[in-house]
Length: 413
Image (cartoon, rainbow, N blue to C red; front, side):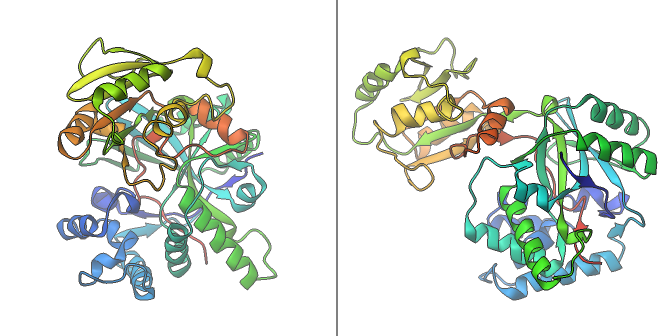
C-alpha cells in the first residue's frame, strides 16, 4: 500500500518558472554550474549548488555554502520569486519530449514506506553524495529536488489524472532543451481523497532516479525524529518530495560504454575473442543501434559490428538476464579485465541522449572501442527491485529529466 499525501508546495511565480526550473544539481560540475548561474541568476541551480555564490575555489561542502542556500531560499520566497500554496495540494506535471508525453503526480511519499520496502530501490548509494544532500536538506529545512518514482499503471489513477489535467495548466513553458512542461494544481478535497485512496491500492512504487536524494531525505527525517521524540508521524519531515509516473508512459534510453584501451590486444584479436561469446557480424547499417534485447553494437577502428548474445551463455535471473550484465560478465571482465566498472578509469559511460555520434567521437578522440546497448526496460528494473537486488552501474538513462525548483517541500512549519 503506497502512502502519499498532498503538501503546500513552494513554486515559482508563473512568469519566472522557465528561468527558475533547472536540471538536477548533479549533472553539472562546479565550473559548469557557475556558468549556468552567471548566465541566469534565477536558475534554481544557484540554490541547489550555492557554491556558485562564492569565489572560485570555495569548498562546496562547507557549512557556509548550505547556509547560503537556506538564506537564498528564504529571500526568493520573500521577494515573490517563489510562492507558497495556502492549502495542501497535489500537482500534475506533464513533460513532453519529441512529441511523447508523460504525466506524473507530484506528491509527498512516506518515509516509512521507504524504510519498510514499499518504495523499492535498485541502486546502491555513496555516502559522500548522501551527505551533501543531507546537509542541503537539513540546513534549508526543505527538499528541493524531486525523487522520480515509477509505479505499475493503475486504471483509476490514470482516469483521475486525465480528468484533472483536462483544463488549463497553472504553469506552462518550453525549456531551452525543447522539453515542454505543464503543471496543474489539484485543490478539491474529493479529488485529493480519490487519488490518495487509489495509490493505497498500489503495492509498490520504485525509485527510477534520485536514490541519493531519497536516502538523504530519509536520513534527515530520522534525525528530526530523534530531535522530536514526541513526533506524531504527521509532521512534514516524515514525507519526501516525489513525482510518481506510470510505467507505461516512461522511456528508458540506452546507457552506452566506451573503453579507453584494448587491454593490450590488437583489434583483430578483440574481434576474435568477442566472437567466442557473441555472434559477431558486420553491422547491417552504419552506425548501428541494436534493434532488440540481446543485441549490441560495437564500434572499433571506424567500423560498426552487430553482436548477438549466445544462447548457452544467457541467464534467466533478474540480474543475469540484463544485457549490461552479459556484456560485463562475458566481455568487459574476461577480455578487458575491467572487474569493477564503478571504479575502473578505463571505462566511461555515455547516455543515449547523446546519440551514436558521441560514441564515434569518443573513439576518435580518447577511446578505442564503444558498445551501443539496447535500453533496459522498466519491467527489468521492477524485477531487479522486487528481488531485492541492485542493478549493474549505469544500466538506465531516463529522459526527460525532472527539473528542480518547480516544486519545493518545506519539512518544518
